[in-house]
Image (cartoon, rainbow, N blue to C red; front, side, top):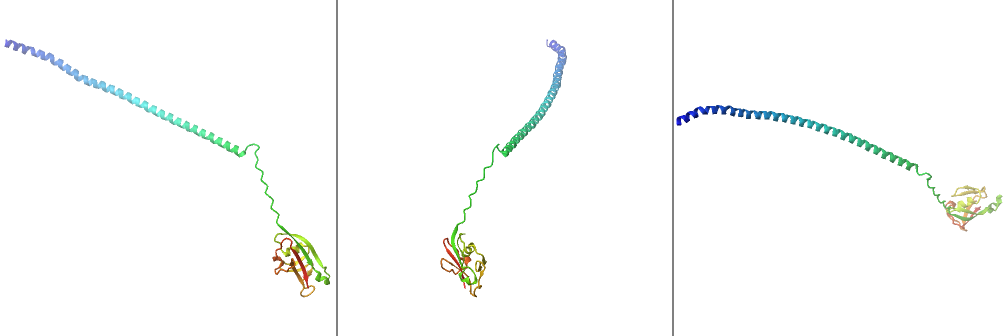
Length: 222
C-alpha cells in the first residue's frame, strides 16, 4: 500500500507541478505585466492630464494676460475719462472766472465820495495908520494910509503895513522907505518907526505877531 501510494504520488506530482507551474508563471507574468501596463496607462493618462493641465495653465495665463490688458485698457480709459472730467471742470472754472471778471450787466463802480472842503484859515482884523506929517516940509502928505485890513492869523506889523496899500522898501526887519519917503531924506536922523496900541515894541516889525483888533501906527520921525 505504501509502495503504491508512493508511486502514485511520484507519477502524479510532476503533472501537477507541470500543470501548476505555467499557470502560476502565467499568473506571475500577468501580474508582472499588469503593473507595467498600468504604469504605461497611468503614465499616458498622467501625461495627458499634465498636458491638459499645462494647456489649462496656458489658458489661464492667456486669460490673465487678456484680463490684465483689459484692465490696463480700462484704467487708461478711466484715466482719459478723469482727464476729460478735469478738463471740463477747468473749463467751467475758467468760464466762471470770465463771468466774474466781466461782472454783472449794469453793475457800476461806486461813486467817489467828495472830500470835505478844507476849512478857511483863521483871520484877524486890524487897523493901520501911516503918519507922514513930519515930512510935510518936503512936500509929503500928512497921512499916507488909514484903513482896516484882514490878515491871516499869525500876521505881523510888517504884514499890516504892506496890506495897507502903500509901497514899501527895505525888509521885514527894517523899513527904509514908504511911498518914496526914505530915511534921512528930511534930516540925518529921519526914518520910519511903528507902534501897536500906542506902545513901541522893541522887536523888528516882522517879528511882532498881531492879534485881532490891534491898532498899528507907522510914523515918520525927523
